[in-house]
Image (tube, rainbow, N blue to C red; front, side):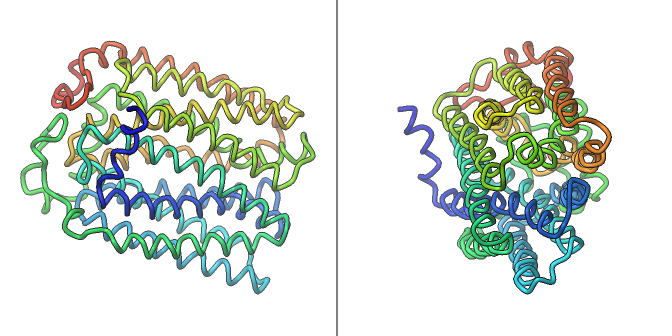
Amino acid sequence: MAALRALRPFAHREFRVLISALSISIFGSGMWAVAMVYEVIHLGGGPLELSLVATAASIGLVGFVLAGGIAADRLPQRLLIIAVEGANLAVIASVTALAMFNVLELWHLAIGAFVLGVGQAFFFPAYSAILPRILPADDLLAANGLEGTVRPVLQQAAGPALAGILVAALSPAYAVAGVAVCHLLAFGIVNFLSRQTLAPDSVDSDSAGSDSVGSDAEPATSSLFKDLREGFSYTIRTPWLLWTLIWACLSVLFLIGPIEVLLPFVVQDQLGGDSRMFGFLLAIMGVGSAIAALATASFRLPRRYLTVMVVTWGLGSLPVAAIGFMDSFWMLGVAMLIFGVTEGVGTVIWGTLLQRRVPRHLLGRISSLDFFVSLALMPVSMALAGPLAEVVPIWLIFFIGGLACPIMAFVALFAARMMTDEIQNPLSSGATESADAEPGTV
């Protein structure tokens, strides 16, 4: 019965098309994560240069994600997704050609990473806004669980593993070419999405917590500033949402830079490993996240959904504190597995809460604010990781990050009174959220 619940979204054609395109696209993103690292190294770069390229992607994401949220609430999500995949294909194909002809330079990679970051800024708010339109409320947890399963399997496991093999056997350029093929296939598939099903509506009176906030009056003619203010106002006046985003923002600062920028050098210096070892470590984390996401999707949303989400995320960061002391592949693999499992559980619950408790006419903007606030410090983390590693031992960077995040998680849990909120706002099967119509009353 639990397995059948996890597969129920596949009964809907639009979801089958969407998840197919998403799966291929994120497989390519997983390959890019490794191909980009070793293309930088191939060009003679080190932690500083890798920080610059990774920061360019972060700037593209953070700089445009608010615009992406507004676009998701105003424009057909189908057109947004097609446009993003087309842009991804164009930039990766260009990088592939430059790499194959041995004329690729670091600034080319930085520009390509920036464009891919902009694409993510428009894609994910549109994706979050689509799901409640094409699926019933009872299937949203399963849909987020499926997305949370295929993402780590393909983006953090299969994609990086294949890219690592291609880099070791051939060259980084061939791994980049594989990314281009993925985006070509995804671009073709998303064109099968139905135009009518994914046309944006104005306001759904049946959406959870239908907080008007003045948005049902002439939504098409409202200003961009008003749209942004409406989303910010709802977030600030909703404690569980605000404090989760505060925690996410700080955890990104402490964790993303070290994991994305410094982990390849931990593998190289502490373990004597190469691109294949780095790729398989990411694969271990991805498999753990996938199994956890699928398990979460197979059951009902927990009654203490906020507590489970925040505590799981916080405790899952503890193994990161020990990464700088590990000299065994298997020890590091266990740390990455635990981090992946806890990430998978929390992410599935979080995505479902946005779609169940946030009013539908605000979902694109709130999803973009989720990305913006939680990733606002990602460019800073990326930019600081490389230079900081030049003056501070890498083990100390991981140690501080791994200890700080659990502390911040428990601060958020009690500051937002989440344990009271989740009892007053149960999300049982078929239930709708009403308390968020007047956020801040809890």
